[in-house]
Image 1 (tube, rainbow, N blue to C red):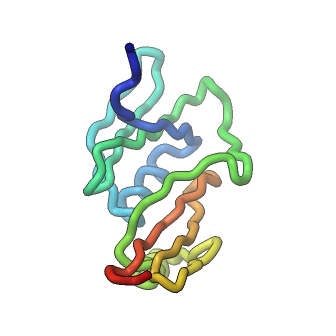
Image 2 (image 1 turned 90 degrees about the vertical axis):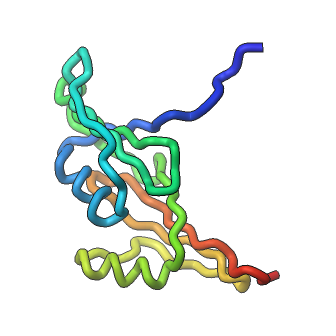
Length: 132
C-alpha cells in the first residue's frame, strides 16, 4: 500500500514576510532553516522549532492577492515549559495572550497569541509529573 510517510512542512502565506519571520524567530524562538524563491516567484522562508522535525513555510506571493485570515481558520500549536514564564516573555515583546492561559488541576494548560496577519498560535503546557 502506498501512503504518505511523513509530514514535512506546513505553509502559511502572508502579506509581510519579514514582519512574520521576525515574530516567529524573536517571539517563538524558531530557527530560520532556509530561504529561497520558488520557480513561480514566491518568496519562501522555512522555520523550525528546536525539538521538532516538521518545518513551517512562510510564503509571500503577491500575485495571489492580499491574505485575509478568517477568525478560527487554523492555528499552530507549540509546547512550552511554562505558560506563566512564556507570558512574561511575551510582555517583554509588548504582547499578551489573546485567550487564556487556561490551566487544569494537573498543571496542563493552553493559551493563544495572535501572530501577525491574524494567524493564531496555541501554546501548550504539559501536566506536572506525577499529577493525576
